[in-house]
Length: 115
Image (cartoon, rainbow, N blue to C red):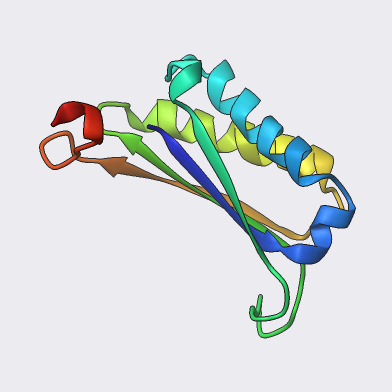
């Protein structure tokens, strides 16, 4: 935890490599100081043809962050802004770049080390 899942149009991966995109999100998440670096997980879901943005096939990037509850609104906003700013600098020609942060509930979260 945390998990950062990047949905994007496949064609943007011709602008920057998937590795560079994943690394950028990892670096910005780590730079916030909210997480242990070894706990940060970043995944990429490129869409080849089955998507619409504003009714058209436009390039897009959307990052979904799932983090453990306990961070305040300012911390979560900073996290989103840092990552979107970094992606905007890498993909200046992509019109749709966004991110949202969802909280995991400690009471219901479980992983294999907890059992």
